Length: 166
Image 1: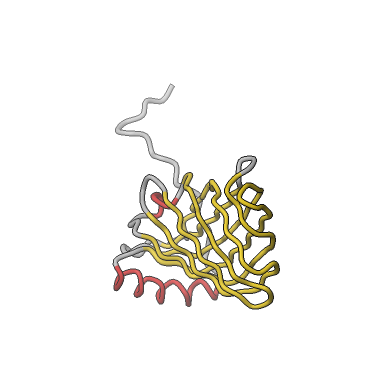
Image 2: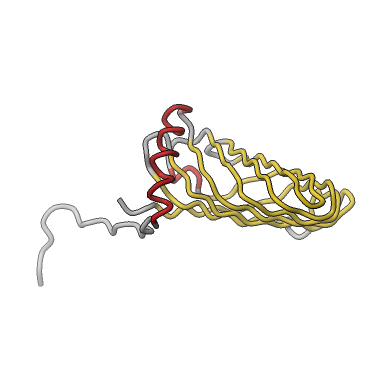
């Protein structure tokens, strides 16, 4: 039997290697995050729903995010009404997006949050979301394509963060 001296090593959290484009984006996002003293990110978002006050809606997004301290990671978020929720309109939207959050670490982005989103798109359009969690407030603005005109929804979402390997 072998004795361990000192404290046992903690397992290293899994990380993702950045691709060529990420290696170009991260320094730009680090500069912006440092200047704003907030977490920022770029990514893609999709959402859809149908309802007239009560209905069903859901969405998902993936972002490359960077904290003011320079930590980079991938933020994956999925959300839906459970099973029915506050929804107005019928349609779908998707496109590139910009994220800004008052949290200062990657771990503060992970976990559950309440999200309220609006969109205006029948062809080219825009959407905006505000998510509130125990750690802070995150806003997302997106320009993309959609169908259905104007819509809004409130959903419960779950986020996961995977750090970028240093």
